[in-house]
Amino acid sequence: MEYILLALLIGIFIAVLILIFKGKDNNDISERLGKLEVSIVKELGEFKNDINKNLNEDFNNLNEKVEIRLLQINDRVNQRLDENFEKTNKTFTSVLERLTKIDEAQKKIDSLSTDIVSLQSVLTDKKTRGIFGEVNLRNILENIFGEKNDKIYKMQYPLSNGTIVDCALFAPKPLGLIGIDSKFPLENYRIMVDREHSVDIRKNAEKAFRNDMKKHIDAIASKYIIEGTTSDQAILFLPAEAIFAEVSAYHTDIIEYAYKKRVWITSPTTLTSTLTTIEVIMKNIERDKYASIIHKELSLLSTEFKRYKERWDKLSRSIDAVSKDVKDIHTTTEKITKRFESVNNVEMDKIEYDENI
Image (cartoon, rainbow, N blue to C red):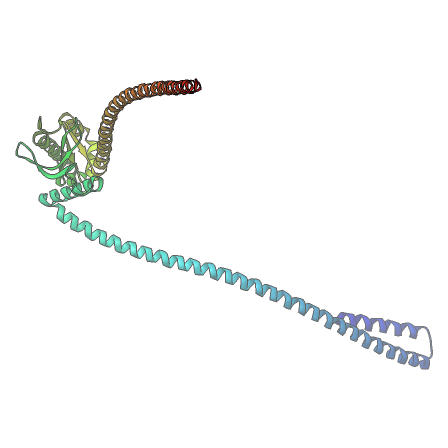
């Protein structure tokens, strides 16, 4: 704005100089200058008004656009804030839920740790370990065959040699009675797998663990495999999967020794699979047994039906013969009836003839 006014003033000054140099008289110059001043002032006033008007319009338009733009920006910012707040709220809620679950899991872990410590204290005693193994064995049998299913298994079953096996499984022939005994060799196993002990101590514990396992295998083979009473094989049940995995992975000599003694080493998982297979075999044998009975009864029924058919055919032939005789008798009766009628007719004609005589 200031530059425009400065340009107008310079233009007026140049115009005045031109008039002066043209040699006009002072009166004429004064008159012209007065008119020029009035004209310039008027034009400057109009120009100023136009500029102010345009500036006001531009400012109003600009202000209106700025306000619209600010409103749009404000709406977008609010929308983004709402979206971000919603996402933040969901994330916060999810974090709270996860923290709650973590807290619950931590409580369960603490409880489990307590249980494990108490279980370790229980399993330090051989007698309690034996009870633990028997209870575990009973639970597996009840889950597969049902509770107190004496036809299939019995716990603490006395054998003919005076020994008592943890479980006697009455499998179908040719297996027969299979003894299942629970063993839990834990002391030497713990020392053997504990990395805090020295190598020599662990090696000695490993040797003792192998001896423990072989003693258990010998005891089961000598006590629970009785010729003529039980099957020629028995099952050693290890209630700990870790011990079974250790034996299977790193002590194949124990597996081979048990195989020679006809003793099968099992864990909770493998025993479950073995018993499930035996259950399927027993069901198939029972099904085959009933199928043979049904086949026998059907064979007897077939014989009776053949006999029935022979008798019916004989009766049918008798009925046909009687029917033929009845038909013949009926025919004869018809002929005799016709003969009587003929005779009667003849007599009547003769009597009429005599009367005419």
